[in-house]
Structures are given as C-alpha cells and as structure tokens.
Image 1 (cartoon, rainbow, N blue to C red):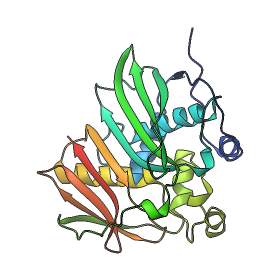
Image 2 (cartoon, rainbow, N blue to C red):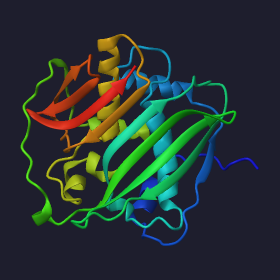
Image 3 (cartoon, one colour):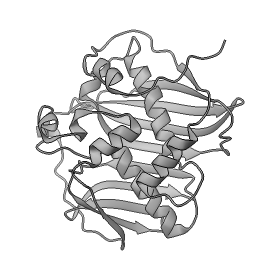
Image 4 (cartoon, rainbow, N blue to C red):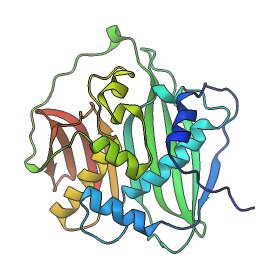
Amino acid sequence: MTPPNLPRQGPALLLRALLHRPGRGERPALLHRLTALDLAHVQRFRTALGFDRPDPPLSYAYLLAQRAQLAAMLAPGFAHRIAGLIHVSNRLQRLAALDDTQPLDLCTHGEDEPERADGARFVSLHVTLQQRGQVVLSCQSRYLSRWGRRGERAPTSEPNATMPQRAEWTLPLDAGRRYAALSGDWNPIHLWGWSARLFGLRRPIIHGAHSMARAQAELERLGGRPLQALALEFLRPVPLGSTVTLHADPAARRFELRVAGRRAVAGAWDD
C-alpha cells in the first residue's frame, strides 16, 4: 500500500497543535511519502539561508522531517502537550546520495525518556528518509516536555569563547515571519512581540532550524565541502534583532553560536 502523503505545515496544522491534548496508548511508527522534492522551494531555502552549493542542503531535510514529526505528535497516543514542547537538540546525517527525482518515504517513531530525578521529561522523535528502501537521511530531534524542579538544577557558569570567530550576522525584526513563510512553521513565539508574550517570552525569537541552517552555510564556506552530519544543542533563545557570531574549530569539528557573548547553540559537524 502506498503511504499517505506527507502533510504540509501551515497555520491550520499549527492550530491543531496548539489545541492538542496529550493522549495515551500505543504509538506505532508512522510512514509518509513525499512524491518529489520541490526544487524551486529548495532554491528559495538556499538563497534565504546563504548557501552557495546547488544541491539540497543537509539542513533542508529538517523541514521535511519536521512535517513528519508534527504528524506523529498529532497522532493518537502522543503523551505530551505540543504547545509546551521546547526543541533542545537536533542531529542530522546524510547516509547516501539523494535522488531529487525519486519519491521519499519518511518513517517516524517517538521515544519517551525516563523521567529524571528532578521531574524533567524529554521525548525524542526519529525520522528516517528513504529511497528505494535505502535510508539516505536521518533526523533525530529531542524535546523538553516538562521542566525539572528549579531547586535541583545545578548552577552552571557561562564559559568564555575559546574558538575563533568565523562569521557574524544580524537578525532582522521580521526574520521569524520570513522563515515561517519559507518553512511553514508559524509558531507564535517567532512572529511578533505580542504573540511571543502570550507564551511567556519578552521578545520573539528565531527558529532553531534557522540558526542550524545559517551555521551550516557558514561552516561549508569555511571548509569548502558539504556537511554530511550536523548535531546541535539549543542552549538559549536567540531574540530577533540580535547579532549572532559563529565560532568554530575546524580541526575538532566543533562550533558554537553566541549572542551578546553568551552561548546560544553548541554543535559539531562532519564533512
């Protein structure tokens, strides 16, 4: 049987997510099909995020995986409130060459981590993108579902930058809305000041996937080769209007994004 089409993201799907109530029960793996890549959309993504190479960037795979993840979150049995999830890490890997003329099958399954001693809860969503039965790309996203008790969190100090600065960019105040139009992710925390304040933020913040793609574009310029794997931890929000600096150590394949001297993203890559 042919899998159902990969759902498109947009305001209607977001509204369903905002109104979603956690469920209980089995969560079988879900399978969706993308009949073909929208190459015009890939080109708009490349242009908007600063990519030089003509092939689909590794971080573009997250736009597809995110659609499959949201479908899995909306399926019966997902035991977490979608509107409260915080994206804390992401890992992308290219395992084989992508044929942009062939359909993509996306298989998604979720995994609830055991509750931590401080009461925090995390859930991971794994997506494999397959062509002709072979996995060509994989995406693993980890989300914080419930905060731990504050009294049990160990205090941490902010380390100074030890890697050279390699790039810098400033986020326009409308960057969240522009990326939402490109990605289909219309989460209110990224759009306007008033919509961000409804969710407890003083200022709207940029999408983590935007930071991931911008970092990839700069790292590829730095190394002169396309990335085959990219792993990131999102440490703190990046407000719109901020200046972001990329610090990287090509020998160790490590990087970080900083805002006002503080780490916002820490990551590693492989090319």
